[in-house]
Image 1 (cartoon, one colour):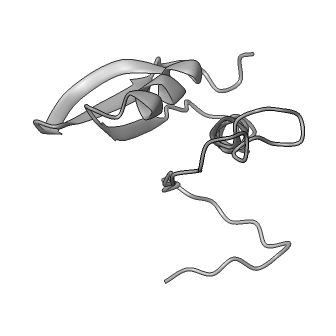
Image 2 (cartoon, one colour):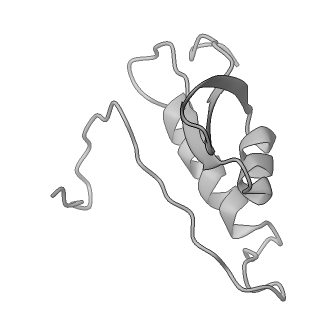
Length: 103
C-alpha cells in the first residue's frame, strides 16, 4: 500500500485513476462550471505532460463498452486509438504517440 506525503515527489510508470458517479443537478460541476470529471482528467493529463525528464508519453484507459460517458471523456482528452481487447466487454483506448517535449 502506498501513502502520499505532502511535498514528496516520486516517479510513477502508471497512475491508476477511477471514476465515481456524481449526482445530477450541477453538483458535479467545479466553481468554473466544468464537469468534475473534466477537472480531474485535465489535472492527470497535465501531470503526464509536465513529467521530468521529458519523454515519450502515452496514456491509456480501460472502459466498459457500454459506458458512453467515460468513452466521451476519454475522447475529449485524446484517448481515441483502440488497442486489442483483453476482455470482450472492455475497450482499451490509448492516446496517439507523440513526443512529450512538443506542445
